[in-house]
Image (cartoon, rainbow, N blue to C red; front, side):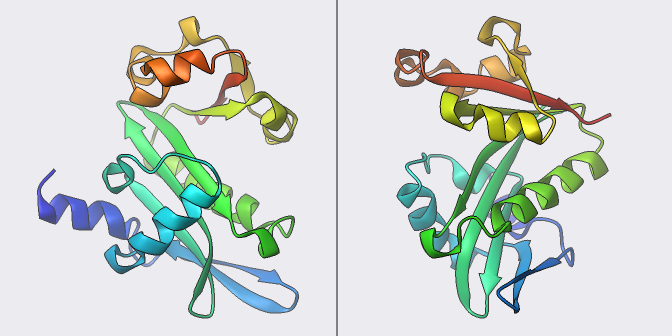
Length: 173
């Protein structure tokens, strides 16, 4: 990816911000900038998720409380499909719907882009939370080739984790 395309992918949807409230404070949800990437990566790592290839994601979104980044989310586009890479919120701000606001922001962007379905790979213990959001379980063998060939689905390390991983999707159309 050339530097101009990378800059564009980091900035995400221009001028599209969402606001949520946490303890009477305004949390702004909008595109991450290249300057945000060190903090973005740190937050993703703290949540025990992979940072490989984050810069190649179509949308990198942050939740900010003043100048502090309190949550992040990343999504790739693989053919006609959205692939949610990560949603992470700093521990002191969890259970306050910041993750849900990040999720909704990316879901809206995916629908606006005309994508067919949204896919995620998650641990078994997160399944009830995603079922509440309308996602359905899908077997790995039934994933579209664009998703099945993604390194997070096809890599040996992830296949070794197969007993605890679940594949889920949501129809966007």
